[in-house]
Length: 376
Image 1 (cartoon, one colour):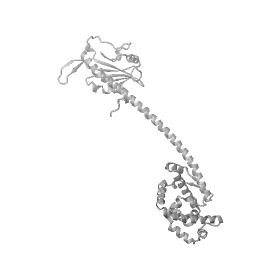
Image 2: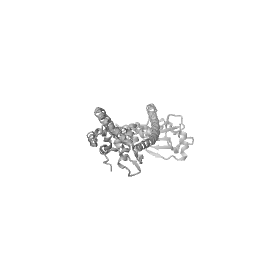
Image 3: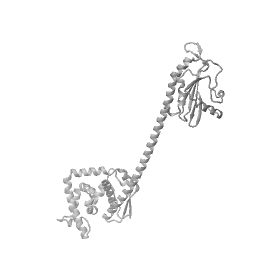
Image 4: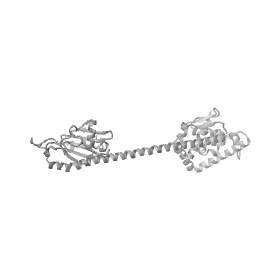
């Protein structure tokens, strides 16, 4: 697997590539400063740096040169001043090893690489051996390969900086994302809190409207489900009214406290309400006639309420103008049951008395609207 050169120290990158650039070299050694201290590597072997040699290596790392040819590189043969021991030979051919210095990205000193060339070179097309590099050939190597090695070193540094910058950007993005998540969580918590207060006020108004003594509350999971639904306030009000009236009517006086669980909340309600509103608009003329019929029943029911008598089909029919029979109410409700269900579900406040007291209408709402069965 190939990694970006900037994922590790430039010296390690060069040590791994040097045989591709110089197949002729017999060995390579590198010395560099890392975050953990001085590193020394011979070919592919990581070497320990004895404490006694560290001052000498540091003095070599203080060199102002870019490169030089040396006789040998052996720590044991280095003098106490950190310079390379010179050979007794004055022959240029004795200096056959190339030492290259690079600016350290860690401490501003120099990291260095030593390429070891063999004493003699064999041509591949014959067995002729000839002495190692001449001064001219060394100059050619310096002019040709030094810019390549320096460019590779610089590429590593640039890629390393790029990765560092990308990491900083990623970390900042993660930090911003976490901050936004915290803000969102706080906003959601505030919304759920406000929603809870609104729903409590709404359920209490329905309790008072119906005249029951139950305490209707929404569970925390119900509130969170509604908060995540994306409903507008009209849809929320409609659904809370629908469920609250259903459970109050069905449970009756069986308990003093009612907890509405999330299972009673229909997340598809917004689409259903829109469909119903569209249906009302498409059949407005027909629905207007049904609305007028419900208005007449509701007006008669209010008369019964004012007189303090029971609100049922017998009394409602008797106080209509003109009076009709109870069976006429039952037949009319049965004939228009789908329209009546649709109208009352979407505008309960317009006909609350007959919706809660007229059994023919109660059966429609209980069986068709809530899917909970008849009240016991």
